[in-house]
Length: 463
Image (cartoon, rainbow, N blue to C red):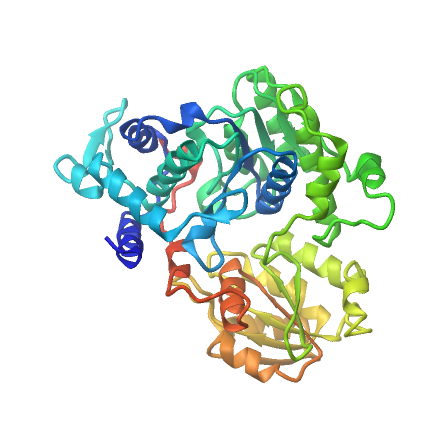
């Protein structure tokens, strides 16, 4: 099997869609020898900030001398981004080997075709063929165990309670925040969404959260009490983070929301000090050197052009981006090239959003800050129509120059002479931009592996 063939195999698993429940993943892990039993985890769920918080935790513990596995999704360009050890992407040869080995153990779809359905306790029949995410979750567990990782930073895929990652028993559970997103799967209220995220809370395992919506926080508090899990609430970035960065050093990920993510990571490290001691110097250095592409990532091209890439894929993310731009949180970085970039109306916005997101409110949030707006399709089966995005942006900012483009490449060409450009609306779009701008090597069409579909049934009624 070649790497291209391994990727094609993973593409084939997408045909089985996304299923919510843990039975398949437990079965696959058992066939692989239950590698999760040989690992320690910090399990991270939440609506926004999961990846950034994971990156911060990874950087801190790696700086402290641990061998750290990192499992995140979606990937921006290469599938290999999802599985890393000490921030080194899993190699192509290891991807091939793991796919082959898991297939030989009976994990491959063909092993389920003789009995593709299994009965659940209530008598219903469920498809037992492995999905892409279930397969990749077990791939990651097997690889991290082989690599003898001291700790794995383990990000949920969707929700938490019935997410494939929830077969582990972590040292700590982290819930970044609760906002509206994926309502068709997680539920249409913050309480329902919080119940799914709080599903990662385990008996006696501490849980750390920065969730502040009263409706959501009440659910997390109730679940923690029921599980006898100590709850640590992070209200703000706090004095500890300010003291940590006293002096010239700063957090390299800009935005007030990233400071809160850093405070959450810091609280997690403090909670686990008795099990995994980390010095204050390691915490500071880890946060100072954290790298997480596609989140308020300001890049300078060889011609001196500045472009900001941010995967603001839901309303809360769009509000965080707007705040960072309109309140001057990026002022220090931008003034070197664009003195007035922080002021509303002085920005060129390239926007592409998925149809199943609240794209109208995303447009209402971001359009008023821009002087020029180019709407584009996302390279996804679920893309929102660029013309509909343009109409929504026009309604929110009728004085802006707005055009719908047929591709991101065309929009970047149209904005080639603009002083400051923001590409946002979807992490898929950010990944495409990284390739087009030559900031990440093209690897074939691996970005489409992020695609998934599922029956639009709330998780609260599933399994």
